[in-house]
Length: 396
Image 1 (cartoon, one colour):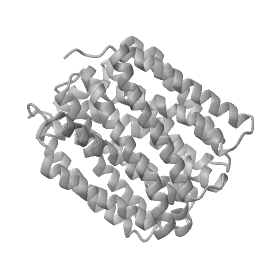
Image 2: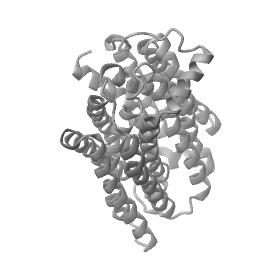
Image 3: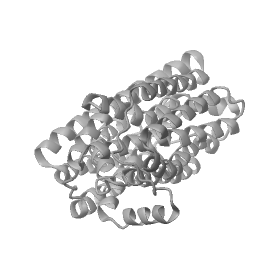
Image 4: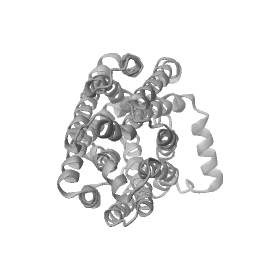
């Protein structure tokens, strides 16, 4: 495939995750009230999706190594479109949670194939730059998602926001069926054999470079997820924003993330991967410290959250680009499996954090602020210790 086509698919396939989460977030308080559900049940519509997403990647990865990226991708997108339609017509919170979990299972195929495709076509150093371009597209999708979700929820109700996910799934499916060309150079006919699969997992988890970059992506996503899981309640219920205003606030964070991916490409060209990750760590540290300090001092305003978190998103643009590409770098023959394991780690982390947040939201900004600050510390430790020691990218 041509380079521009690769970036387009990376944008769409990686973008399926933020559109599935961000577009419905403005509607989450309304969904909770409409079904008369608890805060914990509301969080399950997000955490169940992400847990299913994480577990499914452990299956989709080896399947894509065995049968190729294209059949896995097309099948997964078809299932996603069906599950999105099911969410629109869910009559109870329990059914909505189930359909959201099925969405998570299905979208795992898209994200696994996107990450693996990058390793199929590029060496890790080039892959980080291409991944950053795809993540720029993801940022654009995320930037549109929250305002669109807010507008649809305000004007037409939360089911209209869910309908937009169905439309996205159908468009992505048609695009993949018509334009996607197989990128796997050679199928691994033994990829699904239990002994081979266990051997592959063992090879991956014993490699320190995998852990350095997978943990970088995981901790960075942990900080983002903490913000996503708490922000609609904090901004709408605590700070009094409308759904549309909240969507615009989320869009501004996506713009910061897009800026971070552009910055990442510049830094990679000038300094290389290790130094780029090191510099990104400073952005994360400053943002976490300021966010926690303002919350502790009792400055509970919209800007006291948005401004420091904007700096966090700049660093997130660096850490995700380098982390997602670097975690598959040492495994050109098992990129699907490595991508799956890294994705699984990210989603298990999000599920655990979502469960904690569901029982610790106290009607203030503190769970959001202190949670992001805690993740910032873990990100910096990973970026400044593990990546610097074990993160030298492969040359082939």
